[in-house]
Image (cartoon, rainbow, N blue to C red; front, top):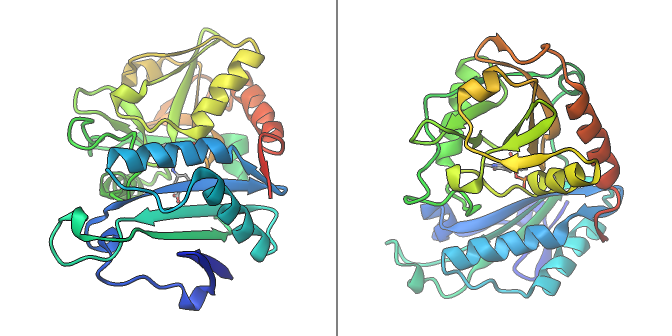
Length: 288
Ligand code: PXG
């Protein structure tokens, strides 16, 4: 496997960063998780825009322009002969002294990995996931905006660990006011009386690329959609629930904390959205 590292393609065994890299020392950096479907990098431009916003938010100057980043991403896929893959694009603050000071890190580190991703087993797309609410709250946007896709994922990792303790593969994370924010690595949607509802980013959600795709698809399919405050009650009484993310795509959730959601089976709106999403990923984006 060839990895793009600071302008060169290197063998995965040689793709190493320094122990003084602030991405490692402090989680100081930003990243994107992107999918390649049948030679199409899904919504690459949208991912790169979010990367630019994440970098701007942490006052990190990206070492490449958007066009250069796009080309490096495509070339990483080509170099590895991939047509379907998971792409991880990471920009760290770079190498510096011990001590937080980002201004003492002269050069960001940029690497791009294109590889396989382990998805949820197929049966969960057919039968739905049983999810739980975890005690760990999503980070308050005033502490660290969850809209920044930063290398600080400890909040989500704590949620993921708790989900596993309760025997679930994914979990609802509430914000510190008790409203539903998102899942550990996915956004959440419910269907209620034919309408799609998802929490706003201001409630502590990442502005997911899959989430924004669902918003576009819903308009095309004439399914009403809106952002709204959401509590666990809204999920308890929802007709359907599904999660979205670059890894998960669109996956039905049929139980929350042992309670059945809707009929307990993936519902018709979820299935329509999932089918439309699967078609869209092949055409919406950048050919490598
Ligand atoms: N919320 C969080 C906290 C995420 O990390 C999403 C929502 C969904 O966003 P997108 O843009 O993907 O629709 C994410 C995305 C991984 C992995 O390596 C994580 C994500 C995506 C792909 C792979 O576990 N998280």
